[in-house]
Length: 437
Image (cartoon, rainbow, N blue to C red):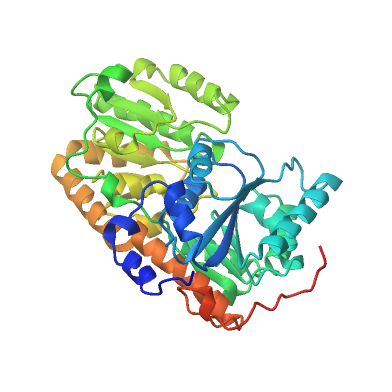
């Protein structure tokens, strides 16, 4: 059956279909499979709740299903988002690699290259250091027409060897997508080809954050006083996030606002991580007592933010473009962040929030107190922040830029296509390298 070429345009202009929240269901997927589409494989480490994974899922939910046939690959089939991926019935392949530097990795890379070749994948898009290093060489050997790497933080945690390896591997990619200008500048300074580095900033689903979003029983659930101002950090519990400096700032804020409470919303890569235990002990030593609440992972971020007076991001290094800052601003919450990574690209100093130096709890506390002291200023910052997210950081903008990049890269490589259907391409892709797998 030949595809109806008007249908993709109808889908493209239908708000109900363009704003699909879950990945499409099986029945819809079977209908779409009858159409010729661009075969896109996206590779990520796991499906945990973290910044990269959330943007990965946002994009997967929102890409036009009449233009793109999605395939997924990962190192481990685990994480909160795995059920949604499996329910979509999209192809998902696991490549169980514990180290990139042993024979097992080479065997799995060979399997991955065979998968690309057998399924005639057109675009391979990898997310993060380990997927970049594992998948890009295999995709190049398999002759994938377009290979895209993603670098989503400034990489301050990487070793010099890791930096060299990723730089070498990224030479095989057609494009390196970063989510902040700060990352682009860092890569160019390290010798990456500036023509290959493209900035596509994170996008937020604004429909989750509305004036009617309320947390009905949050304070009761967490044992918080009904009128206490809440100051929150929404972050993965990792040393680069600087949570200890937030706790030290909290102790200072409590001298002026003894009724204030402080939420640490997030978890480490493993539950009850050593860093979390260190932070909990630090809070006790600072005398914060029950005013510091470690909530763990929360799925009700929008509802939680509706109760928050100030959102803080105290990271000290290796930051890209923060989802938590964008979500806080989308919820109309004023923010305080450090001048690290892409934070200054999100927060307008003195307009949507305050920027302070990293590792400076006194400066953090001063900025928090200014907002608690002036509800009018906090409200003005919150409103300006929401308007900034609507203007510059919407999910629709991110999806449009990414879809355009995919099609442009195919065209740039000499694969002139009608972006709505492969039937009009007129020829098959010419692989970069003939490899018999």
